[in-house]
Image 1 (spheres, rainbow, N blue to C red):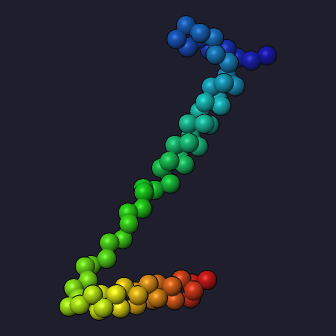
Image 2 (cartoon, rainbow, N blue to C red):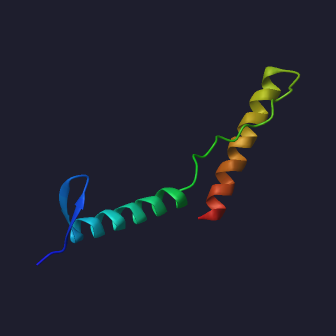
Image 3 (cartoon, rainbow, N blue to C red):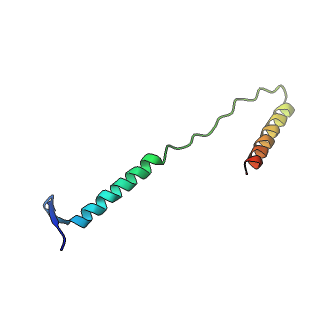
Length: 73
């Protein structure tokens, strides 16, 4: 049958211990390799002399990002 162990006053089967060890091993590996949360990239402030210039710079940056994403795919 199954080997039983006495843990904290209760009878625990060896198959339960094996499943617990495997679960701890795989979940620990998953969390260790998942990495940290990604931080948003902050852009430097736009020092424009007029609102039109600021809009032009923002539109240019958006277009450059869109072009960069298209090139990657």
